[in-house]
Length: 442
Image 1 (cartoon, one colour):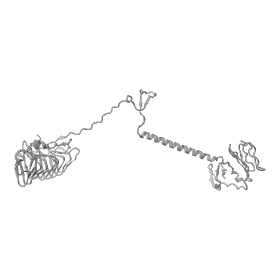
Image 2: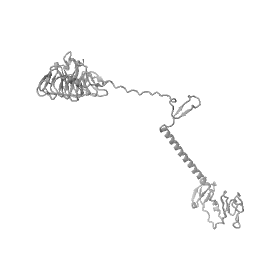
Image 3: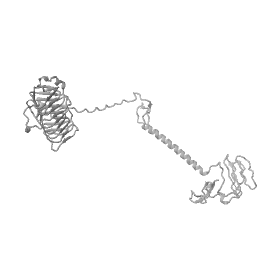
């Protein structure tokens, strides 16, 4: 049965279970240490008379000397008498329980009987706390759902109906009427959309200048001299050489050996320029502003005016290839010659007796001598129509206007080249002098 413990210091009370007898506790009001006293054992239970509260009649006595129960509904319960009898009144619909022990020690006077239909006073705050906790949890859940809806509205696609103002705008508190739904063409003012800016035009191509041109790259090794002269006015003279020569490329230009350039060395836009410590350049080394473009060789026009092969010396042309082997010197008349490959062996010499144009569809290999008429570069034009390589590995001077925009040009050995060079790539090694003939540009 429950045990009521009352603090003797502050009067605060609390109920404990009967199995808590002997437990030391601390009062929540004054912090005084108390001990739960076990109820005194009763020798014999007193008879209990239970009567419904609504009955309006006196309660019969169980035995002589017992206390009277409240005679009618709403009667106040009797206080405990000197004999220790206790009586409580239940609420409407409850029961009245009268307990009369035969004898009860004074120490057990704190133990009272309670109706099981009445909740304990200390259980009511617990119910209130449970109710408050439930309300708080429900509020948190509702707030979370609202936040989720707001986040979905802000981050999701805008699917809300469009609202278009139909009345004139006012600065006062009056709200203009709105129309819900897709806007009509008349309600929406046209929006002018500026056209996208046109891309910047690519820089125009620059016609090929006169000089030593490697469209993709130029690389020089060894000892190289580059200058200019005019064959139309005088023969080349080293002391009178002009400083108007040009060495240029759309790509990188690298001079690793000992080079002396009377003129300009210009790499391509955003391409590197590498000059060794022994290289001297008298002109500009700035990058070119616009790319250099070389037109393809007009094969049809040259082939249409080509000289018949029968006019060549016997044994010079074989299977479409112009080949000079061994120690042989051959002179060819002026004209245009359409050949597959051009090959001149180390001890062979090809001499032009007039202005000659060689249309080469394959490769060019010159290890011997090739002589232009009157040592004028304009009298020997070599045009390479395909990607076949061009190799100059001679020790003789070469006077020529060489145009091979799709070919790689590899120059080695020792000699002097007079005229102009155009190739896809230019690579030079050995000891060479390149003398640009300014008359070719006139």
